[in-house]
Amino acid sequence: MSETSEKAVTFRGGGFAPKPKAWIGVAVFVVLIAIAEWGTQSGWISPLTLPKPSDVLETFRQLYTSGLLFQHLGPSLARLAVGATFGVSIGIAVGVLIGLFSHIRSGLVPLVAAIFPIPKIALLPLFVIWFGIGEGSKYALIAFGTFTPTVVATYGAVDNVDRTLIRMGQSFGLSWWSIVRKIILPGAMPGILSGLRISLAIAIILLVAAEMLGAQYGIGAYILEAGSLYDLERLFAGVVILSLLGVIVSTVIGFIERRMLGWRS
Amino acid sequence: MDIRLDGIGHSYDGFEVMRDITLDIPNQQIICIVGPSGCGKSTLLRFIGGLERPQRGQVLQLGNPPKDCLNPLTYIFQDFALLPWRSVTGNISLVLEDHGIRGAAAREIITDVLARTKLTDFAKALPKQLSGGMKQRVAIARALAVKPAVMLMDEPLSALDSQTRELLMDDLVSLWSRQPFTAVYVTHNLAEAVRLGHKVVVLSRRPGQIREIVEIDKPLADREFGDADLDAYQKRLWNLMRDEARAADEELLHV
Image (cartoon, rainbow over all chains, first blue to last red; front, top):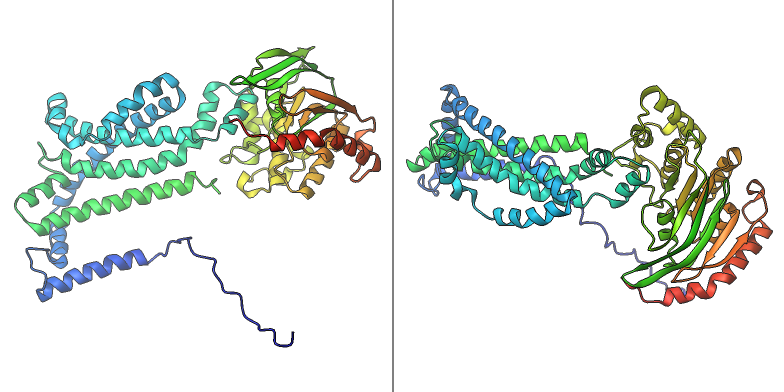
């Protein structure tokens, strides 16, 4: 036993636990834009393939100084807000009803499944006939597009509320309405909020589609106009605005989640 | 208020799980129900509190609950069933709100039950900040807040480690000694049964039937961890159950 070899045990645990690293996300953007800038400057990316990031920035600056930015942004944000508010609130209400009542569930789940895959853009002409070429059709398109993913996320979230908590509520003699309001809704909140992330991203996508018909101002209208003229600088400036909008919405939801869902372990 | 179980029987999908259970639960006594897994002891508890309906027989309430009793049949669950988004205080006020008790009246009750369960310092904590033992204390405080006539305890200590279990058993005994309550206590742990039960009801394996009712005369307050006479009771219970438990363990699950 004198020659016992001694060796450290090989470490084989760890990993599989991604953590957010604050600046890497920003660095990826910076590197990609730097490559594009360098490529367009030195000429190995032709200006027809990709506009110069510095030119896009310049277009954006002009947009801002001329005041056109807010002229476009204002109507778009209003359309997003109104459309998404309608779609999300009706979606949550219907989703909760599907989660609570057998008849409504049996009746509406197939209907929602049938509506979900329809590209809502295809229905724009129909909405124009129903709600007019003005703001109505734009609200309807965004509302309709956010409605279906919200319904699906909400009834899934209601289904996932811990049944033992509901039995607890019943065993203490809580009324039906108390159980819904104090146990089911807060319990479904995490699922509803993560559904909201998807719904609002879809709302931004549909904004461009909604502004295809009968819109003079709006980010979508701006992008479409630039697109039809092959004005890549303006096209990209518009796309950057939509991306920023997406990032802002996602940040706001993240903030709400931290505030409202601090109870999650 | 007493509870009488009168010929309770039940089947799930034609599969008999319980047969002809008749049992009296007298006022201010703790009745422990033990039995091998799958004998339907938790189902029986749900029948007593009206969360499920037995197919045969009935559960009777003899006499009226005391006047100030808000929720005569009150459960304590194995997994605590606390709302994770409400603080300790919020979890207790939840069960008072529906009885119209708010504000100062609610605060008075909450302060009282928190003091009785030694939770005063944790009033504002969220469930995720509490250990398992603390969570079950909160659930006990919540149950006390509605002044139950009968407490229905479904393996309340089974999710806790053995040291916490000892501590909570002491707490339950001192709660009972100060103010005797009626309880049906379902457990698979025989040590708990002999520490807390005035009577221990032994159920057979499926279909669950009452095999024997063992009475333990020793006052609750005098019972202690490792008492020789309690050990003798525990041994007797185990002898009653051993073969049943083995058979139940080897059974295929019909789910």
